[in-house]
Length: 315
Ligand code: NCD
Image (cartoon, rainbow, N blue to C red; front, top):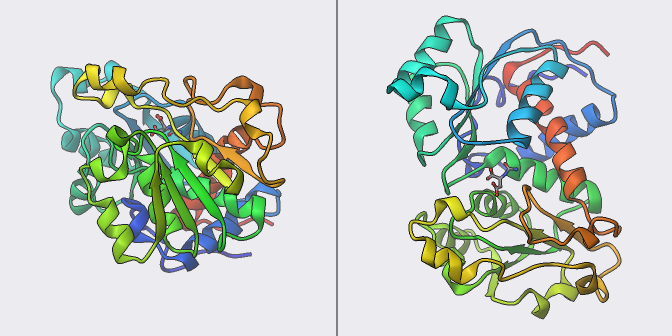
């Protein structure tokens, strides 16, 4: 298979809203080929990882993905060891790496919207690896890949998205990707963390797109109807006021006891890290998919870098 599809080449990945259903399905096909070891690539480009916020999975899966398709990586996993602490701007930091010959930036940053600003100023592709509470499009790609892989379809599924829907960036990007299919979404959160409290107008987007959704506060009311429950961590570090955090912390914990009446093929997902939202008793049930989901990050990011950097295959 030779893949160098015009629409993907040199593309920025800023928002999950920027891609179509057809494009997602194409990405999933390529990711699946990498996962099944049916595709090998030797792209030979340089990917620069700039992580201004902590990360375990996103940083390492992107780095590993780049290496596995024959790319080089540079950059940093923490800005603490760089001249950023001396006051260097994000623009200057990127400018430096373009001088070293980078072909692509993967950036996690505490400023919402900065990726669009950077994409307007640099010619090489900019991939958003998370911007504050706003978006995390590549996480959503691997999330929906995991759903697609588990069910062989997405249409018709009932999907609960639970937790910090206000400050989390994975629920918004996930909802944007899922809005391309005929799904029923249940936004499950305490009132303080519901979607209408977000800074971006996500609810307006869902209504305009005609997405079928409901907002509920207790997961027990819908659990046995769901195909997927996507759990998220309460984003303590993003609360402007920690007394608000105290009001909602620990408000939901899924245990294996909760799963007694769920559908046979029901799956529990989580972008990770979990703090205490999913009890470890769930790990040994056939419903737990969060570690498989994290693993899929490698293949989806291999596919993404491969398509954007326009590699040739060897098999
Ligand atoms: C998420 C993130 O960074 O937004 N983690 C991830 O990328 N897998 C979720 C989180 O931090 O809660």
